[in-house]
Image (cartoon, rainbow, N blue to C red):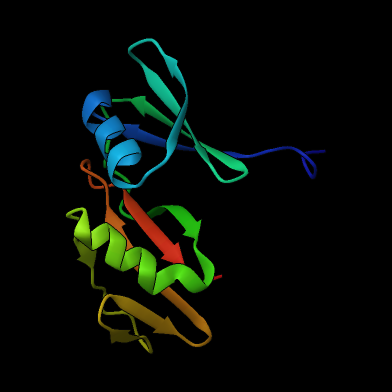
Length: 125
């Protein structure tokens, strides 16, 4: 029933002004629309990200967003570091860390957090 329907990623934030500065200014996403004082939709490639104000902002302890950056992984990490982003380092069984990149077999990934602590992954696939 939903096979051909678009999925929109959704992230709870405490302060839309701070979130907009991060998602638009730091990550470079374009604002598609603003829903008054309650939410902002960003364009992210062919997808969308809806960021909304919630008292539960940052309570998810798992990855909430994945960006497929492909071969640009290291370049993207460097660019975000220039914008002040700090990358997370996790100690997962069987995973090797090279700089900010986690090597998991044929998958390479890096993690960062938004101002509310929402976990975002950058993937090389």
